[in-house]
Amino acid sequence: MNVLDDLSKFKETDRSGMLALVENFPDMMKEAAGIFASSGMEDRGPVSNIVISGMGGSAISGDIASKLLFSSSGVPVVVSRGYDIPAFVSERTLFFALSYSGNTEETLSSFEKASAAGQRL
Image (cartoon, rainbow, N blue to C red):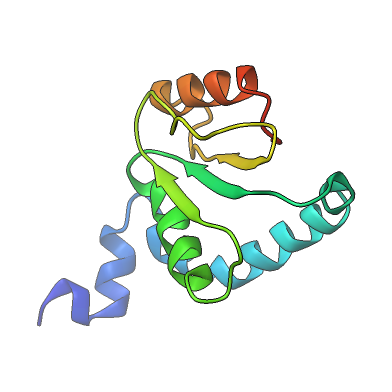
């Protein structure tokens, strides 16, 4: 039997705990929604676009969000992977910098550039 087909074997070999992260994803999304609701971001007025910056696995959340919002968002949702940010980032951009470790070089660089462009973090 393949390791991926045997949940107990998969858990034994899942050293990074990815299965638990995937299983807890709905709870993490609820927590994130609660954090947003208490952040005061809604009071800052409308945004023109949303940029989600991340590398590797951290960018997957951006991919999921952009797909979920594709047909319902009134603004473009762009996933950015790398050191730079899109030229359109401004004070009307809602910018998310995602890094599992908190010190991903590319994500920190894009965060600094987005901050300098005046976007909403």
